[in-house]
Image (tube, rainbow, N blue to C red; front, side):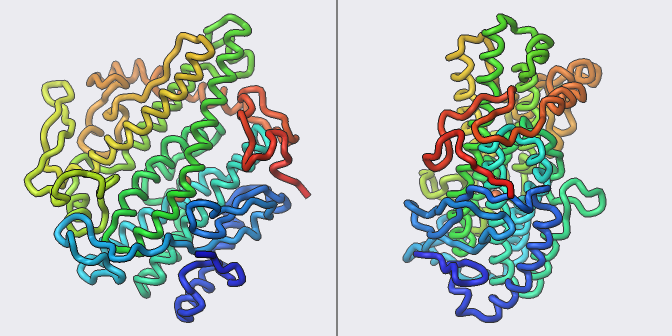
Length: 474
Ligand SMILES: [Fe+2]
Ligand SMILES: [Fe+2]
C-alpha cells in the first residue's frame, strides 16, 4: 500500500481517479499553505529539518527520514487499508455492514464529530508556533517540528473526509478550519484547552503528554466508528500520535532527571535554591501537571451527555477498545458511576451508561496518564529523591460539567471559595511560577548541546546520535 508521491497531494485514496475531489482539494491546498506560513512554526523558513514522512501505511516501515524544508513537507491523505467485511460493532446498527457513505440521517452529527476533531489539529500548531525560538536543543527543536507537521497532516486527514463526503457544507467547514484561531476572542478554536497558551517548553511537554493523549483516546473512539472512512483515517493518525506522547513523556522525564541531579549535587530540596541553580523545582512541575491534567479532563466533555449517547447509539463514535469489551455493545439499561457534589462532598452516583460515555472515556484515559506519571516517579526514585508526582483528582479545577460549579482540591475535597483562594498558588502555576519557567527559556541550537534545565535524551531519533545535527539552518 504505497503512497503516490508523484501527485500534488500524496495519497493512497486514488485521488487521481476522482477529478472533482482532486480539484477541490487542490483548491484548498494553497489556503492551507498560507495558513501554515501565517500560523505555523515561527522563524523557520530557512531550516532543513530531519523529519519523518509517511510513505506507506504498512505498520512496519511506514516512515522515511530525511532533511526537509518544512515549506516542502509532503502533507497527504493516508488511510489504513479497508478491512474486508467490517461491520458496525455497536449501537442500534450493530451487525450491519460498516458504512462506506454517510448515512443521511446522521450527516450533521458525523460532520460535527469530524469538525471538532479537525479543529484541534491546527489549533495545537498555533499554540506551539513560538516555541522554536526558545528550543532547549536541536533534538528538541526537531521533535517540536515533527509534531507540528503531523498535526498539519491530521488536519488534512479530516479535511479529506469533509471534502469527499460532505459536499458543499463540508468544503465550507474545511475553510472555517483555517479561519478560527487559537485564543482569538472573536473566532476561537472550538475546545477550551486548544485556546490556552503553550508559552514555554514545560507547557509543551505537559501538553504533548496530557492533551495529545486525549487525542489518542478520541481517535481510538472514532477509529471504532461505523463510518468506515473515518475509522480508517483515525487508525493511521494513531500511528503518528504515539510519537507526540513520547515527546511529552520523555521531555518531562528529562526535566525531572535534571532537577534531581541538581538537588543531589547541591544537597537541597529548597525550591528557591533549586531555582537559583537554573533548574525547575519539582513542586512547580507538579503544578504544571495539575493544570494540564485538569484542562485535559474538560476535553472529554460533560459527565452526563445526551450527545455522547446519541453518537454511540447511532454507531458514529465507539468506546476505547470497543471490540475488546465483553458486553452487548448496546448498553441499554446499563449504568456507569459519575460524580456529583452532595452534602458538601463528592459522591458517586449511577448514571445510564449510554449518557456516561464521556466519563468512561475519561476514566480510561486517567489510567493511562497515571501510569505515565508513575514512570516519571521511577526517574525520581532512581535518583533517590523523596518526592512523588501524582495526577490530581479528576474533579479538580473543572470548567465543564456539573463539577465546574464546585471548588475541589487536588485530593478531591470540596473546599470553600476562601480556601481555594488561599491555596490555589500551591495547586496551579502562579504568575511567578510561569515567569520563572519563562526566564529559563533560551535558544540552544548547537548539535549536542542542551539547556541547563533539561537532561539530554538517552538516545537520538531514528538511531542517529544525540549530537546529530537534527536541524540545519541555511
Ligand atoms: Fe493530531
Ligand atoms: Fe498529536
